[in-house]
Length: 196
Image (cartoon, rainbow, N blue to C red; front, side, top):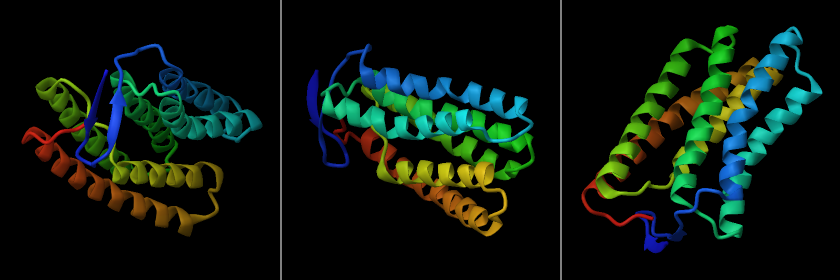
């Protein structure tokens, strides 16, 4: 266990615990994807109450895991990795499903996968060189939220084309902005800046 100041100037107490409520919540977020896709396919691409509940849980759990980690004082190295990986896996499967349906353009999916792959590679390199995982940054969280709103608008509200275009463009721009900020942060950390 250690206390350190990260490059964002926050003091965070980080533990080496594996079995925490927040980690369990993060893991469960990935597991709801498969019932969502299964139910959607087997209900003739209609959204059912069960799908609503599962997607609502996926969204709430993205905030809940961090709140629980801070509330219970159980921020962990595993959790710092598991939370964004759970986000990326959930998004990957839901977005690839909607690309397969023809509802989301392939270029958008490719941009997201490329961005996330580069950020994860940078994170893995930081872990290898510095021995710990850097926490997510605010622009990354904003990007994930905009992408989620875009996906929700496509999945639940297919008639609102202008809203979908707005969130597609806004989230694509934020993918680029957040990538640049992650890259800058990566260089600060690799040049010796303290972080969580």
